[in-house]
Image: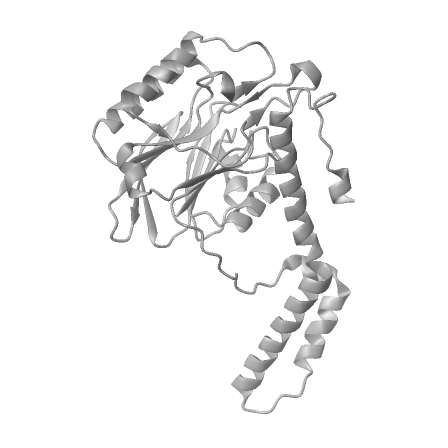
Length: 335
């Protein structure tokens, strides 16, 4: 199973839908949690259209232009039952076949540490019931100096010690991560630039025991100031994706000609066999054409995203000013 969590900083902006579809297509998560949607009422329908129609959908409306959570999941072997909702979290029970159900708390903690106390108390009470539990999302807080770079010097303020006390008292285990160290950047330039690890995943001892092969990845920070978080519970097994006709192919006149050529190819046999054979010929020709001529577009997108991830990791290791004004360039990759 794979869970995607992303503070998108506004699901109504034009860049959200294509970026979200891209991440879902690339990583194929079973559950997606979108945080800080800044959506309520009818505006949530726009976000709903960015999700496959067959998927389950649940939303927590934002308070004005602040907050908002969307949970959406694929209808399949994974069953999701939502049983508690508030402005800072959505708690659900996840059932996978014959395995023991576990609890997932998708967190979007308030920026006000006084309000966060309510969240810490609710999660602590639930953990005390001793269910296997995953707690993940945007905690809007860090725990030590290694989780921050740039800005004012780190100090152990009250909000940080309260977060540390919460983690210690509950026994939650940091699941670690792969990818860039910091999940959030204020996108300022020069000395004003700040990075922090605000997004993370924790598990109870029971959850970690059940899913010892877990994997947490910080994906490229694109279309938001936060990295998406991808939490996987299974060992990755590559699977060749099924053939799908891509709408963008219609922009190429050559694709129309290839379809005509495939369907005009003489084929012997009954009607159903001729249809099946021509569909197969069309599939083969389009797949080969896409790989040899058009496929570079998709590979280049992946290459650019990998380059962005590498640059973000280098930026995190090379100091808060990125060797200049804090900007990184990917022009050489795109060109």
